[in-house]
Image (cartoon, rainbow, N blue to C red):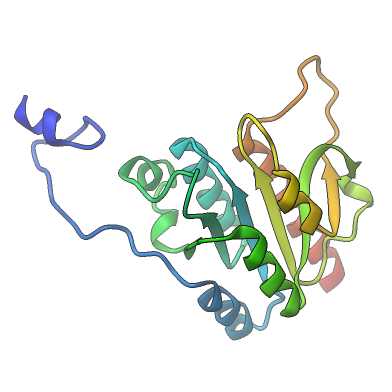
Length: 192
């Protein structure tokens, strides 16, 4: 009973360990990682994602899709928590996550490094017709509002995911996965 009360997730196996908070990376570390691997930078930027399950799932997808890191804002967004770590299925320990004060300013700085930004939006051009090769920053918006106006204005491309059903949107983590793997597909076609 006591362990359940002090456990952040409410789950334990009779043991609880206290650890240091999750460490955030720097955006510069992500660019250095891409350079070290001899790859064009591939970053995922999240605009006000508040659900820890979505953040964890996106970090997991970022790791598996070969992204060099995930960038989140300091305010109006979930940070790295035990729930995020659990949902990431361990990917949090291998995927750099940076927390920035101003997402728009970070995008401006990354544009100077040659990155192009593409955001997900229902009104965007079909993702298959866009060139998603080269240095890419994939921007995913919040669960309820999508990508904010100022962030969207900094994007070079707006990608629409084809939807054939009766509802009008995908979960943020699913949209991130679909677009991340379109980036992977296009980059692998260029290498051949």
